[in-house]
Length: 372
Image (cartoon, rainbow, N blue to C red; front, side, top):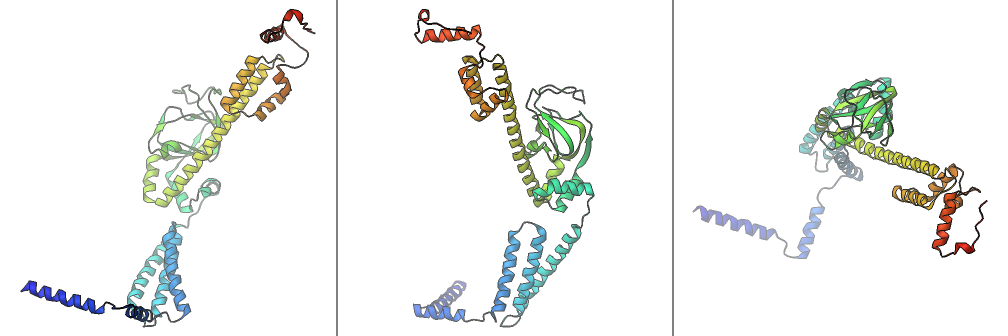
């Protein structure tokens, strides 16, 4: 009995659908035309209000900052309420009611954001924000959060800030003073002062705005420090953050996470470029010293020229830099290629010349070599 009732109902529904199905293209065209003839916006202004409201909502979905998101959402909901209130068929109370709910929520959140961003900074904190954090798109609220999490420290001159080979779980930011970073292998354990610091490793200055420990923080695990950092003659002032505190705050505030990651990427890129530049300057200075040693007797034997050429090729020293190094000690490129300059001819050069002539097949007993 139940099955027969269900079958009859399905037959009636299928027949009703078949009756509503267009039987020809003309009938389909007529139905589409009738649907388009239904109530439209009362005027161009009314239609513009509806489009503007939806565009504001679209913009709210595209922004990341909460303040413009709430403003766009509030404007969009208000325009949609106005559009539904002036609908040709009469006010549409259901979308108007929900629009009022959205307006109230966005207005409440907007008031909270505006009141919470009323932050005051000291002159020093404001200068730090302008010099460092503002360039990485930190908002004042995010900067205030970073200051609340940080611990300020003052480092005495010559004191070791971080030591090579030791694991740290802190992120440091240099605010004042100059520090020196070096890959010196000498241990400084048991001594808070670094007695001497030679340039055995490549050294570079750690100045205001430099981050220390950013590589370990980016790798999400404490890692051995690749270099030793020592405070300069005037000491240093730092901000110190714990990795755990920063990661916990980044989980709560995704926008803060984006800003901090942006800052870490830019700092890593700039510091890597700076280290490469200083390494190139270090290699060029080494080559200048080699040139001075080889040319000290006004003679450059072939073996030494070969050694210099190999050093240039391995360290990317250009021909222009090679000529500049020669000019710095008063030599020309032609004199270097000739193997010497002036009228001084030592016994070693005479022997090298005689040997080269012998290798080329000259019979030395038939040649006269005059040495002044």
